[in-house]
Image 1 (cartoon, rainbow, N blue to C red):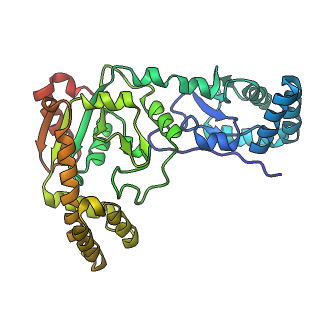
Image 2: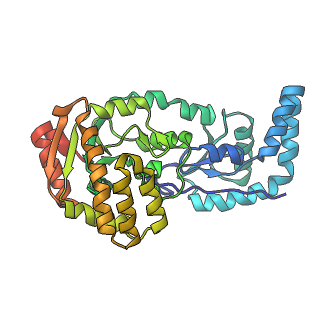
Length: 360
């Protein structure tokens, strides 16, 4: 039999040692794959098939026999589990100032069993009350908090994500929705990206990203539609963002073309062609065909300009539908880095008040 453990690395989450505990998910591999606390290590007590058999036993024979069967499965693995715990504990920096936080689905038998093993291995450990179900159960309350959203928008190619990263580097609170979704939010949005997470895990990433943020300070996010690739934002967050202060970057065409070519210029031409074909109906068959011809000829600049004629119409229409047109400030500049951050904060202070400049 093959047993396996996994460590998880995801965008936007604290590195090992940044919080006083490390999460240890002891659920089955398929449960972990569907969704988990971001950054959690996976050390399943039961395989998927073993968990299925234990569930059948519980249903047909009761709790006591199901527990006995589970321990029969776990017993032969104990030496491997203890050895793996030592390896993971070293990676996670477990010691006097950092413990494991163990969870299963509801904080029951599996997490209690792993808690016993972790103590046996000599490492500090806590068990998360209520398990993964309770951790996710906080989400409606989290979504409904009075977050002070600051929306960063602009036409395609305006380098909004890079601006968010610059804001974060300057000490401002940032939630990178596209990074958490693994998609840049257009027909070309999955080029160069890993597969998107499940909807369940996207919600986990959102919740984990908001954990610890200060409600008294603005949280900067990029302007998004309700859907990012195959995923969608919680309705409470999306509706609140629609009413929030909006910072509209107005970049020159040359800036936007350069930015698009830096992001997509090295992409597989076949994938670029497929992305154009996704928007053929909305772009217009004749324009799409011309863009594909430019791609085949290696003229990415011309293809990008055609794409922008479609995306600019789409963006301008969506911006015009925002329910709070007076909540926007426009910034005409090709500035980047700290200079752009300074311009954004000054513009926001002028229009929305001094709290815009609040950082760490």
